Image (cartoon, rainbow, N blue to C red):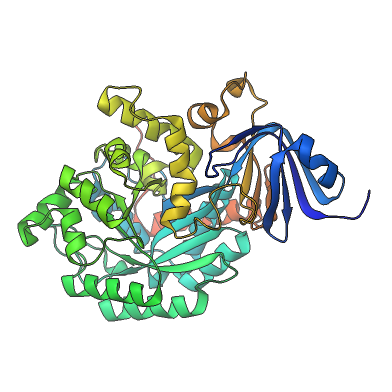
Length: 470
């Protein structure tokens, strides 16, 4: 073998580039050097320069090669709470189950749960994510350090609050999650100063709680500080009807109008769910360049409703995709989430042409990168961009014959088909083995600590099942 020219050379079956021309390259190859994509094109053209001249060559000739997925709404510590709050609507789901569990977690338990979520995201092809809101009791510093060690790229929002309600329900936030406005803002700034920009993979955002838990003055302070620090803001909004009832009754404004009034719209803002929005609110989102994170599984499982994604996209809103959390989705598989997103739009409109697989794939890649302010760095396979790339094995009955790789990714594949994961030009998973985390250790920690948490709180000790377990 001659002189090594690049670090990694990926020889693929198909490459879905998500570049400006949205090229799909048959028998395509990608050369990676110093963490970035050096070249992408037909293997016939690139092989003469790169074949046999890479430190590592990945044979992906029976795979689809595509950008790593970008999950724009993740609750890391909820990864340990799957099946702990089934068959409940959002407010009792939070009040009676999820908040008491999260508010009782030790920092060790929170870290174990968060690491489980990281492991699952890597194994299902997510390379970048937006964590929606950390609180002090979780031991945020150790979680951020573990994200960095895992190889993932992440924007980590720190929760900010100065009230304890949700919509018109006052005082329902679990005491273990309550923090003052001063404390939560100062700690967000501390985390920003310590971690923001770390190796170009860690970013610290503001994560104000939902209206009912944050005062108008604090929302405006968050808006001003985020602009000052040139960072982002993410917040749940208009997830359920109660959110609309609250902002209309208290402020005389619908949720998006309220968010705009307090300064929480614009290109550095990702609003999550936005299910219950009017035509005028959709136009306001588009006009202000505010991003939306669509979470179809969560919205469906909690009976919250179907977001107007097709309408938003037609109006020009940048809509992205998120898995949400363990107890509202039961996995962090963004590949699976793409299919659910597509199907819910067609069934809600009664029109199979209203939303295409290509649009869903954009939501999970380049749209997510744009929402996180990372579009110039990740979200597509283009020369000069950072090498965040996944391979998806198509040599499988459910993906054959491969006559439409885009459709197959959205409608037929799952995260279990992801074979290799490259982030920042480093192989993080090879042939389904994660190299940055000890999978068995992660699972053993979660098995033990989840039992301790469930016994201590009295929640989720037994499954909510109609059949006897003997």
